[in-house]
Length: 427
Image (cartoon, rainbow, N blue to C red):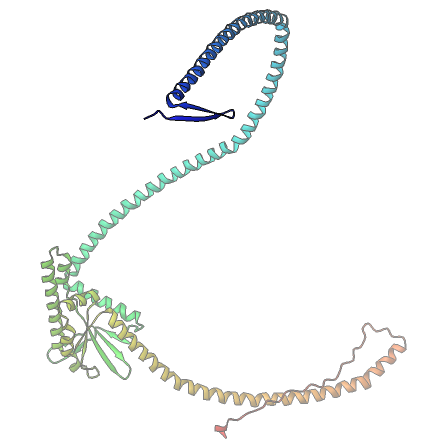
């Protein structure tokens, strides 16, 4: 097999190469180019070395010239500095003095301005300090007063506890409880407007064949009716329940309190006041001077009210009794208004008769006044027509009067007639 042939057109001519010849030619060309580049690089390196050497020499010369110049400048500067040192010092001292004087003036102005700015703050701080001292003093005084008040309150509380204990002990005595109930009842009656010995009677006694029945109060009602009120204060068991610390004991005391109320109802029902007072209804009021006492009993026995009413006893407390007394007082006011209406009618008739008689007398006075006016007008006419012309003649004859004569005027007014009217009922 023959070697491949490559044909290249170069300058219009066709040149034929074998593959090996072409490779050798290419390698030769590349070697030639590389050799030229190496030669050029060596030449350039030599030039660079020469230039560096020249630059170092120029730099050394420049450095020596610079050092000489610096030395000369230093000498000149030293000489100039020595020559101008004193003048510079004098000028500097003069300028420094001017600056110092200006700075002192500016400093004084700033100090004055700062003092003007700080002065209100300083005064405000002093005022705040004084107020704080006053507040602290007032706080100490208030704290001391508060401490005294607290100590007084503690003492009062102790005293109140002692008085409460004494009151509880007193209320355990039957006679004290009875007096307290009666005082409470009396106070309620006064608040209701039922004044003592006017609309009601306290502690009235009605003797019977067996014993004297003594209700605590009888309230008189319009129509000659009476309501009997009896005060009961069964508080022993209730006070024990209040003082009890155990819930079981408290419940037992409250139950005993309910039984005591039931016993008072039975005792009052047995007295049968409605049979001894003919004008009393068939019931009696059992007054317990405290709503809490009845409430405690009702909590233990809700049917206590119905049981009492079945025995013709109405359980009452200050609230319900006040309502009853106010209702009775209202009835008394209505009764009084009815009685006053009759009195007012009689007074009206008498007043009307007196007005009729006065009207007759007034008419006679009017007629007398009309007659007097007529006679007065006649006298004035005579005075004007008879007396004044004669008096004028005296002045014409030379008499000088001390005072002029004033002619009276006639009056046309007359007395108004009294008109009497009669109602249709009087005919």
